[in-house]
Structures are given as structure tokens and as C-alpha cells.
Image 1 (cartoon, rainbow, N blue to C red):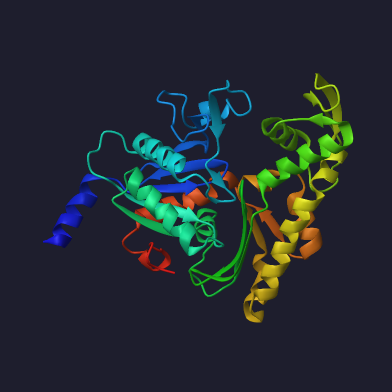
Image 2: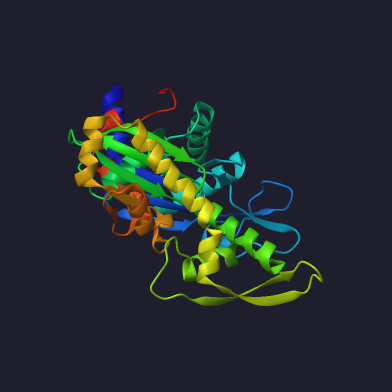
Length: 350
């Protein structure tokens, strides 16, 4: 009787997959692909976790408020370094995204959420509880590296080694995959956000100019690089002078931004080397041919693939549409959720 009831629930509701990222959240609906792709930002009343009850409370419109909201409103990012930093706000954000992806249904969906490989048991339980309170009937978890591997098309079920490096907003996930398992892995809390902070600190120290996170991100995207390029660029930046506290502008070069990004890039390269050191020799031998596949928004930094190839001495390729790699992998799992349970986790599994 219970199995018949479960079958009926699955027929009447679509499974939902969530790439719960520090910078962006992507939601996949079984049978429909990616249906939501918005910043992981929520507008709340200052000093509380009360989300504004209007259309600007979550996502892209809330991100526009970062650093610009009036005194009684603050735009917050409830995830930090790939894990939940504010439970109540994350719950509201998930509720909003689930309803947006699964509108009009009175049946709570099954939800599959990606998690970093370095997550603790407590952090994992927080993700599950948050999703259940936000409207999930049952919650499954998938390691980001496995989802990314599937999303970029790696044949991870084969007895052959493949390396995936997923650089998101809050974490960099490095893993060697074989037989649908993580053979070796590293998860560091250095990624796109850390790059933005490095730019902020560099501009502050060199120019006595305070810029915001959104400005730093725009600079990184426009002229940032991890390896010398054929042509160097300059860009005007605007912020607040640290001496007289007045608005001021300055011009910064791509060489300077590359210098600012040296430390986070170095840490990412070190994480790749550390993962290779854990890799069994037979699988390491496979990587000479299969190389390293880069995914996640952070790999769009110019020259990062060249820098990694230069230091690691392996072939490096950037996945097509790297920002959606994890979400696409989640989408593939959703189509076979009952068959692929062996690579999934629940709150009870360790």
C-alpha cells in the first residue's frame, strides 16, 4: 500500500533538483531542465531574518540591493563557503525557488540538493532540515563533484580515472572520479568570492580606495586573469576614498588584478596537487590521457586553464557552459532518481 502511495505521489509531482551555490542557485525540474537561475541573495529587514514580502525579496532583484539598500533593509547572502550561514533566510530562499520551479502543485516534491565534499554531518543535516521546512517531501544529497562530472559528460561509471575541478562562489571542489565514486578529493573554501575579496583588499591597500563586492566582481569579470594575456587592459573603478571619505575614481590594470588574484589562484592549484597526491597510481596514470576538466563560474577567469596546465603538467579543458555543470548533472540524476540511489545520500548517511 505504501509503495502504491509513493508511486502515486511521484506521478502527481515533479522531482526538483537544486544546485545550492554560495553565489547562485540553479533549480532543475525533472522533464524540464533548468528552470531557475538566480543569485543566492535575500532582502531582509535589518537586524532580523524577516524576508521582505514583495517581488524584490529574493534572487536577481535582491542582488541589486547589495551595498545599496536603505537603512532598514539589508541584502544578505545566506550561504557562506558553500554551507548554510543563516538557516531561516536560507529556508525562505529555498521555499521561494521551489515554488517558482514547481508552481500550483499541492504535493510536496522530492528534492535533490548538491553539497560540497568537505561538508560536516551537522552542515549536511542543516541542508536537509532547511529543504524539508521549505516544502520538500523527501531530500536526497549529491556531492557537487559527482554532479559536475555527470553534467560535463564524463563517463564517471567507467573503471577509469577522471579529474573534475568545480570552482564556484564559495568553494572549490577537486575530485578524481572512477566507478561513480570519489577516489580522491579536496574541498577548499577559496573560490570566486575569495577572488573578489582579494581585489577589494588590493585596491584598498594600493589606492586607499574602498570598493564594494559587486564592483570587485565586475572588475574580475572584465579584466581579471590568472595568466599573462596577449593584450592587457585597464578599467575605471569608483569607490570611497579612505582618507577624506569622499567618492573617487581610479584606473586599474589587468596586470594589477592578476597580481591581486595570485594567492587564491595559488591555493586552488595547491588543492589540485594535494588531490593528485592522494590518487592511487593506476588511476593517476589514466589522468595523463583524460586530464583535468574545469567547471563552475570561477573557471571563466581568463588564463586559469593555462595556469593550471602549466603547473600541473596535465591536459586541461574548460567544460562547455561551466556555470550550469552541476545543475545539468543533477538534472540527469533526476531522470533516473530511483535507479541512481547508490550515489545519493540522505541525512542519515555519512
